[in-house]
Image 1 (cartoon, rainbow, N blue to C red):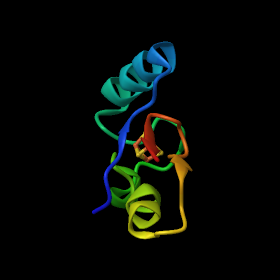
Image 2: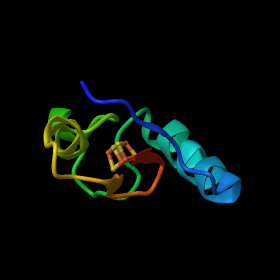
Image 3: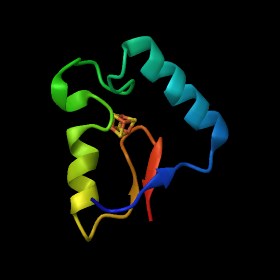
Length: 65
Ligand code: SF4
C-alpha cells in the first residue's frame, strides 16, 4: 500500500476523529455503515493503490502525496 499521512489541518483531523469515535469507526462523511465504509474505507484503499491518485481521502483525514 502506498504511503499516506494525516492532513496538516489539525482542526479538520480532530473533527473527523470525533466523527469516527461517534460512529465506531465508520466514515463520518458517509451515511451507510457498511464494511467498505470502515476507516480506512475501500475508496481510499483503492486510491492508495492507484499510482495516478494524489490528494486526500473523501473526508480529508488522510493525504496521499
Ligand atoms: S479514509 Fe477518509 S474517507 Fe475513508 S473512511 Fe477514513 S476518513 Fe472517511
